[in-house]
Length: 52
Image 1 (cartoon, helix red, strand yellow):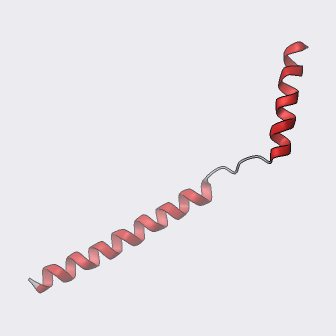
Image 2 (spheres, rainbow, N blue to C red):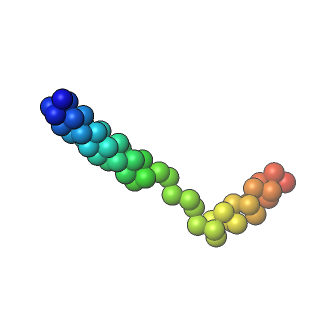
């Protein structure tokens, strides 16, 4: 019974660490939001393209 508890606890810790590292990778590769100035300039540019 004690062996089962030790194995279950160790598996829990390993899986928790693996899931944590995967979450960190997602945060690293998440695309950054463009700066506010760039968003405003693109909003101005897009209607001007349609008129041309």
